[in-house]
Amino acid sequence: MSNRQSGGPNKGGNRHEVSKSIAAAATAAVLGTGAFAQDIAVIAGSVEDAFMDKIKKGVDDATHMVEANGGSVQYLRTQNYENFGPDLVTLINQAVAQGVDGIAIPIWVPDAQIPALNAAREQGIVIMQYNSGLPVKDDISAINYFGSDEYAAGFGGGKYLAENGATHILCHIQVPGAINLTERCRGVTDGAAEAGAKVTVLETPPNLDGDVTGTAEALKAEFIGDQSIDAMVSCADFGAAAGANAVEQTGLDIMVSAFDFSPATLDRIKAGNQTMAIDQQPYLQGFLATSMLFAHLKFGTEISTDPVLTGPAIVDASNVDAVVAGAALGAR
Image (cartoon, rainbow, N blue to C red; front, top):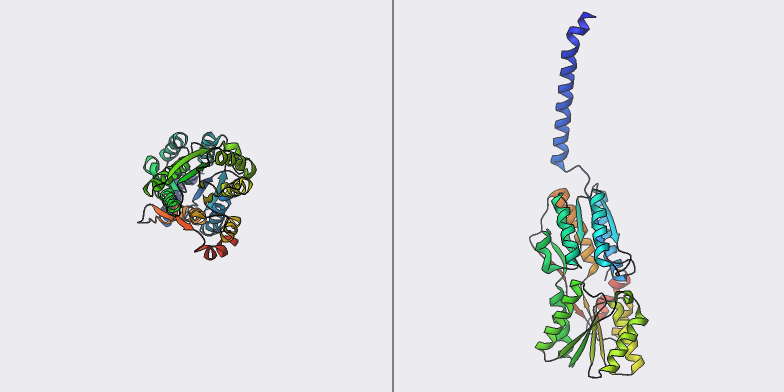
């Protein structure tokens, strides 16, 4: 009894110190090798928006790499665009509450998103930006941006239409207040003006987003009301389908074009029913934002190019065939 009393405390203390040393060494080794899982959230737009499906394919493909290296990816989308700013903040807060290490996100509604993202960043969450909001990138201290320069894309599109004969272009915005769409039409206006054309901006209510029939009726009213309009560009692919329908129904001679595209868009371009589409390669945006955010968290990698521009590029009759194969796979 006396031997246990005299020797026990010292031996137990030694074992405790050794255990603490081993645990500390193991922790240092884990930290040094990046063995902890890196969990990221990728926040995107409406589940009703087919454009976001192309981004999702890029995210899904990058997720294989993330999971192979011990991380995880959550892909979070809003239900629609009718309560867009608050819904985005809800998703940001959801990601924070789930303990993610990084968030990849477009900036569509700066006034709502920037405070929420800065609050997340103050908790140590790394922000990667993609698709939208390049002008406010520094406001959230995003580590990089993968996407198109929306103003430059609009400028190129407006100039293209004017140089191909347009004198009055209608620029259609499907989600009023979204910074990327505002930048697109601002670019269209300036690009068209440089080539001698003018632009009218039409904003349709967000409940018409994705509604080809409803949007076609809104476009028809504009075309009939002002027959000096000889070209239109929608900030969404479905708007080109609506525009083509409106042109067919009115019988007016109006060039149809849009930002982004689908297989149906490419068919219209090949058939001569759509003049062009402005491509930003959403697959690459989803893939690169996901994989590069994870690599930064896991391996400490950096990309010297900032921002990384995935667009714009014009798709028209001269190059449409080269784009068809990638579109059939869901990656263009």
